[in-house]
Length: 82
Image (cartoon, rainbow, N blue to C red; front, side, top):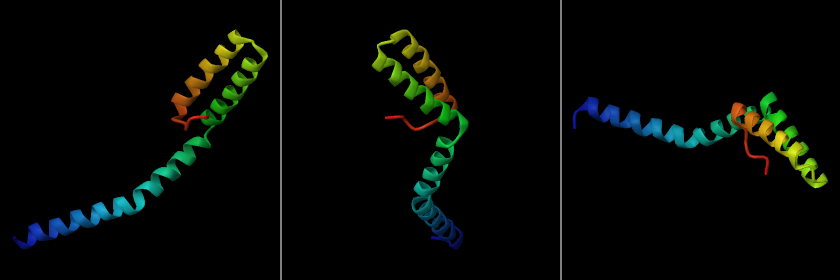
């Protein structure tokens, strides 16, 4: 194996190791940032309103709130409410 191929192999191994070590932490941090966004806060608010309307038996109002919640969840790439 030539020196350049060996150096490239070492570089790839180190790169993969760094991604394995720091990737999950980085991705978790980005999800927390997204979940704290305005879209995600509105998503949770609409979901709570939908649950309250469901408890009251007001299904049309619940459906409106669910539609709004789904739109905000998609826009903000939010974690699931449940």
